[in-house]
Image (tube, rainbow, N blue to C red; front, side, top):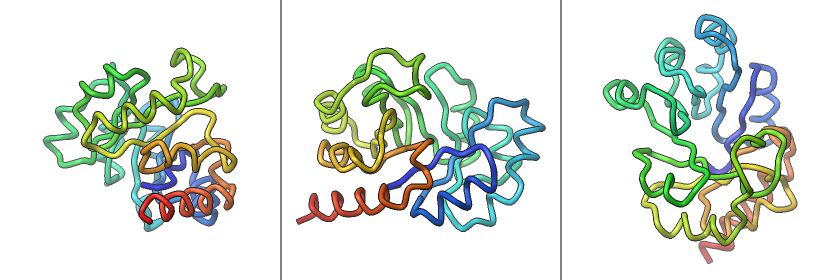
Length: 183
C-alpha cells in the first residue's frame, strides 16, 4: 500500500499506475449506478482496487476493498462479503477505535481535498497513531514527493494522494524511505 492514488477516472488510474501507484482508489461523488459505470475497467488494471464510500459499487465492480469514512454505512456488509476495509481517521481516538484493515489518517498537512477534516495532524500525531494501531496507516493530506518520506519515517506504511498521484518522484521517495526504515 505504499502509494495509494485516489482518482476519479480510468485514465487517471492508468497515469497513476504508470507513476508507481500500488493501490487505486476510485473516488467520485456520484450516485452508485454512475460510480459503477465510471469504475468499469479498473478491475483489469492489475493493482489493488478500492472504491470510496460505496460498498454496493465495490461489490458490483469486484473491487478488492472499500474505503469508508467514520460515518459511512456498510462496514458490516464489507466484512461479510470479504472486502478489504479501509477507514478514515482524523483524530487519535478515531484511529484507535476504528474497525479496519488499514487506516487513511489525516490530513497531515493543510490540503484543499481535506478542508472539512479539521486541523492538520502533523507528523508527531501521525507517529503516535502509527505506534498505537495494529493495522497499516496511510498518511493523507498535503502529501507530495517533498514530504512523503517524512510520513514513512513517522511510521506510515505509505501515502495517499490525489494531486500528486501522477508524480513518479513520489513513488521513488516512498520507496527510499521504506528501504531506509528497514535498514
